[in-house]
Length: 140
Image 1 (cartoon, rainbow, N blue to C red):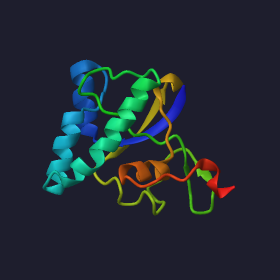
Image 2: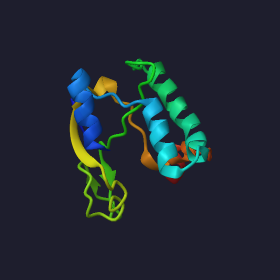
Image 3: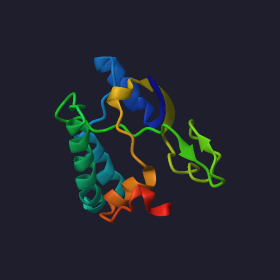
Image 4: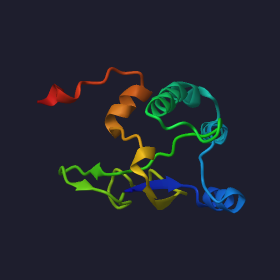
């Protein structure tokens, strides 16, 4: 099992557990929320291909979607502060997390490692923005 931390809307968690005994994020609900938050579909249309690619990579790695509407759940396994120190639990006092997840609650999850696709936060933003990703050994 791996310890992960995720910012989620607590009412969604309660509703889902009350209904099915578990929580599986919904692709269609994420789309509706993104459009409601932004007022249009532009942002969703820009990032959804990267998420669809990631879901394909998860299926390729043997992690099929439990439901056709299932979406990935983003969680932190670790993060590195500006001084290069690694941490596991996100800290809202740190500038990188402050005001980023307002209205969301931090959940501690223990997940079977076979159900986790780890990504590099900064590198994944290259995928989201359709930028080239530098090779991992580029800094060496």
